[in-house]
Image (cartoon, rainbow, N blue to C red; front, side, top):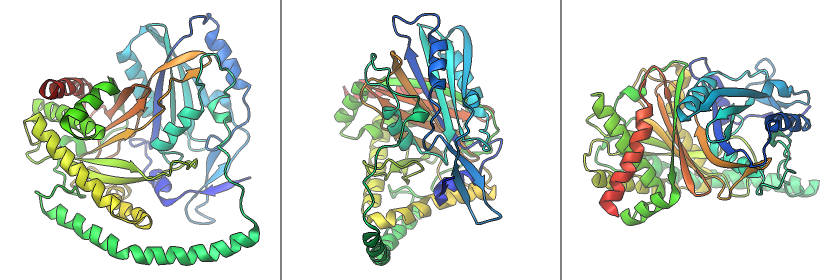
Length: 462
């Protein structure tokens, strides 16, 4: 039986798991049935999946609680996996539209995973209008992060409608890794690696100290564009949450967003933050809950090497101002662009060996709030998480069915009642909005307002 220890970041998601804050992430994939699909398409699909009884990491990993033996959690690789538990069929009353699908996903995403099993589920959803069906896959955040999941997506589907040779995603072997060097070389390298690591850590201390001073200075200077923990105002987004969720989606052409970014001389990510900021400002104005001070966003930044095929989490974080206190959309966008530019420069100025420590300094207060039960009871570290995950650029297929849309379904927690994550696929940028049903009962309006915010920028810039 193989075991694998969780790193501290992965394990931290387990310690804050509760019925109100299940710590799993997911993806909603919508497909068009192939033209030649018969009435037995789904029966054949299910029969086909059951032929794949070989399981590879991370899909064969189950948590083994080893608190009595040694500290921390350990992944245990298991062979006896019940596909009837992990792969399930759901159906919407035909013709199921976007609203009905969103309600189903919200309900499925509200349910915690059974951590006695490998922590993932795959739901096949029938009954969508326009001859479509959906796959909803959810997995515990300790198992994988968004970047890792997006990379896996590109490998677990076919690139052609005629290719039926791709196995079910749990039977996809990991990408081959280079052969290990001889043991004598390993021993020499191990000693050299330890000494080299110590030298690098000591050498990075001045850079880390400088970055920390800059972050502390920004925390106390409201005019400093650099985002910092606890620079955020209190808002209705940052209270306690309950276990039920709301989910909404929007999809925009990449060409539209890139055209606006070129015209505004900023990045695509800045436009994403800009339209989200405008939508949030309008939503909070309508309810009379807009803070006088600008909201801030926590933005995950991948530090995963391009050739890294490992699962787990490999992210850092920056915090940026959203300019929600500014009425003019172009002025608001300029503030966002300046804030993200300074934050990225701040992170990139650090040596690679110091980034993990710096990430702990930025995210430490957030995780401490969750672990201590203070999340949603004290001033927020930041107001909202907004993430942009790059995905496959080519069209993907499952048994001849073309995937037309892919939406991320992220997580929320006490003190973070709303999450906005977008995922690029082919020529579109797909937004998934996840919120607490009780805290934000009309959250779907934020999704609609992002479309109007994009149109507003187009009118002003193009």
